[in-house]
Length: 465
Image (tube, rainbow, N blue to C red; front, top):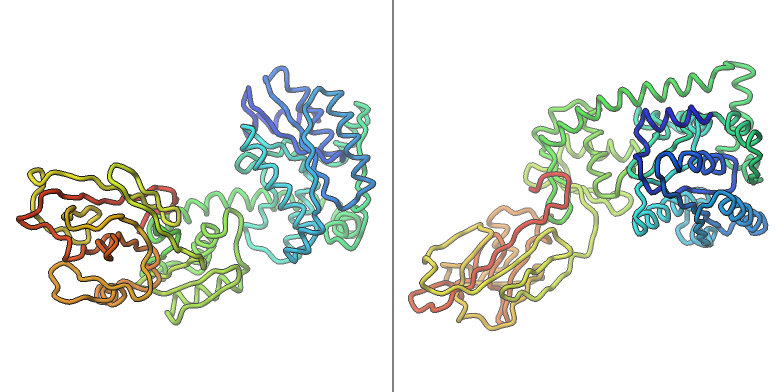
């Protein structure tokens, strides 16, 4: 088994010499074997190991014994141990979620947070081949597509699974050979949990009655799906580059002309990509909801609101997928300093220039404008558009509502909460990216010019609209 783990690490390049690794240690057989194997590799690969035990507050007495065993093991192996305690039942009740789901999400959140704060290169988890079999079968029974058939990945981001190819039986034999104590989680025998039923009853019956090699069959299915998924993902990535754009406020816009030309399977993939961009990696909505979005994209109708705060809005030949957010902001803008808009991926800056260095020219729909510094009434602020905002655009005789101005220029309402305005104490100076106010324009009496510009911080993976 030790050699098998070394081959898995080498083949998938899970560990690099000198890595600092955070090891998830539950006290159970899988994590105990994992930590022991990594300590055997520690010297040769110059690894730094830290173990972390999470007390979920579910099994109070058993958790105390697990903590003790984890401490004893780490002392014996010379590994630092971090212990985190949390009341998962209370968290689950507050989130109206299941215990297993809440505990899992909390574990991964803590692993990532501690690894990031402490500078760990990798997070090692004890998932093994039997876990992969159970996961694939569970997803098949629940209903899944090709993506779900991939099962548990050997690595994703910082997280890696060195026991990926090892069976439960091999792990037990390893523990026995090296005389390693471990804890048994009694909840793993409770048939009320779906995974326990699959592990302890369903798979046992399938091996007896249908296929003794069902484990290998399911792993083959999973590995084939993963190979094909890698190829299909290349197709999806090319489609994303063609028709998906991201706005400065994190909205995702699909070009409907290109989108409608794709087959249904690719349209679904594109929509799932958009949802994952909003909700986070690995997060999506079920097929029924995705197909509802697809129908809106094929035959444009009214906007729809979906679970988890998602809105889908047809606008200007695009299908805009976004989340409801409070985008209220107001920031001071001072010469020589950068003004960072936290709600948008934009920075503003300004500087005072002498009249002789500046040409008298008008720039519309620009990211940089020139205004008469002497006509301003400080302080300057950058804020979002407010209801009822009015200004006198350059060259006009009367004032106009900002909303009407944008409507005249065919700017869909869905984008307007991402358009900043620069104001002084009197009112709007610049509707950013569109027009300055006539009252601050340059003229022959201008002595000092204020140059204001904005630029985008490239934080989104998709290209900006």
